[in-house]
Image (cartoon, rainbow, N blue to C red; front, side):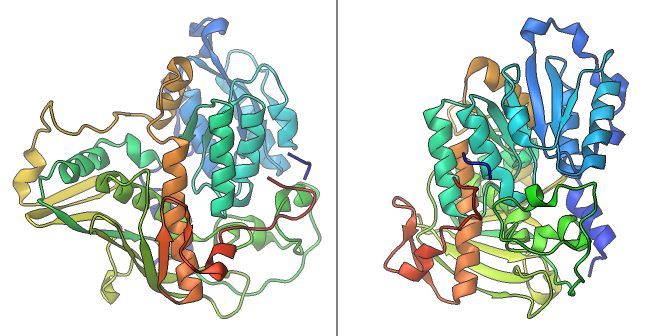
Length: 434
């Protein structure tokens, strides 16, 4: 690779509920010391992107006694220094390095794996560099800004035989797994509809250009994205880059990927995709944020199932937050921390030994570490990640074009629509490239 109605506060709190916690709520006594495991038996880890989500993921790795964190990287100096100090305080001795440039971290021969939780537009470039350097990895969701990015990363992961864990941690939650197994084993009859509801993005105002502060490497923050003047609102999570198309697809992917991935899992389509997509969406008419704030999408599958994917506005008839599998003989609904079904007796069902059993993972980061050691398949591998990510991407494309699109899941392109197919690629600012 070349060099190159919720308040905002309650929204963030709600969006993070059930997700990986922030590091400062993880006690040192609960984490244990790496010294209890011989150095030769440890997986040595570096972390790229250690803001709120990245630090939360890192905290989960620190909780594994056979993991040694030796380096962190972030383009925001106060962030990387704070997390460096936190990691050092966890161990009996220091030794955690802090980097501004991710390439310095990845170049270290002693690092076995990386945790990547940078801004969305950086995920694939960071992961590609890691794969080509022989590192296994945990990559936060969503995967990338275009299908092409996901395809290139999938090829690299396979070429270099790397272990990959996607940050769709609901696959390591027993409630989601059980709901999917009920659906896959015919407990609700023949599935005809899967309702997916997730948080929507929001609009913003316009913000004045500001001098670039000395605590951020803004050029590196922008990276492959088009140049844009610095303003503080651009580089923060709450109201910032999450909702700007140069850096993310908005919550149609940033949050939607979680429940879309579960829909794929329970539909038995995690290695394929829909054959048709159509929907309507609302985009801000002005302001810095420019991703869909509201959407209503239908994705039709060759098996006869329709996935109805909306942002969450029940008062407007939109789907509630979560995933609902509807069949000819009942339904099962699941979200973080809650599961319901009709009839209620479904919740007492036991999946038999000769029925479909999904892979069991009770801890997303632990699952990756175990697979690094055994070289087995993770619960959220790269081929599954690309397929789930694709659904979010083609949904956004259908909304922007405002017409029904035919999708070929085998060829991974739109049928007879050159304009739509051009939107499966995303240009990168020089000198960065795939």
